[in-house]
Image (cartoon, rainbow, N blue to C red):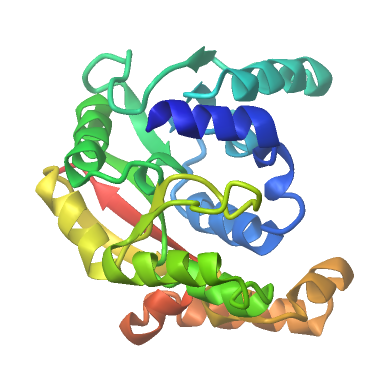
Length: 270
């Protein structure tokens, strides 16, 4: 499975641009949420499966000591080039698996898991990632755990008019049934091997790994489903401000969590 994921990202090279194009609201909201937990002094942060370093370079630019790790060699190559371009030094940039971290016990103040939990289909693997994150955290440290909603493919099907393809409809049916996303249409970019969570399931996995789930947040919320969103982001107008204001206001509303493309859990080491 890991090989398929690496091959997909090496071929498609989409992750470098995703957060600055189709996922801009996700990026803005996620940075705002993480920013609530950043103290004035430099923190040691492990960005695990951090792709090309979008969050890593943002955090390093704020003065924090960031270690980037990703399974895809092309992502690390891009991150190294970006470090030179931006003149921002990360503490380390390494190719590696989120299930086995090279850091010692009690190493980091914060761990970012912005991708591995939705690319590992087996619960045992996801909990292994979470346990590794807990191990390298200092007491009282936090893990930011990103997940994709169980209904993500269904949302995309309507937004992008994909449901007229019987193969995509079959993908949606499988995702809704058990969360295991597989692209059965090799001629179409219906993403790669993934796992889509129910909100309660994400909480259970965090607790099962020995962490406390402090918050579970809907990142984009229902706003992420609106076709007008990119226009608001371009203009930074009143609608954009309302989107930020009200998604923050209802971000923990249980009845709306599944209506967000992405979930972000904040887990704490006791």
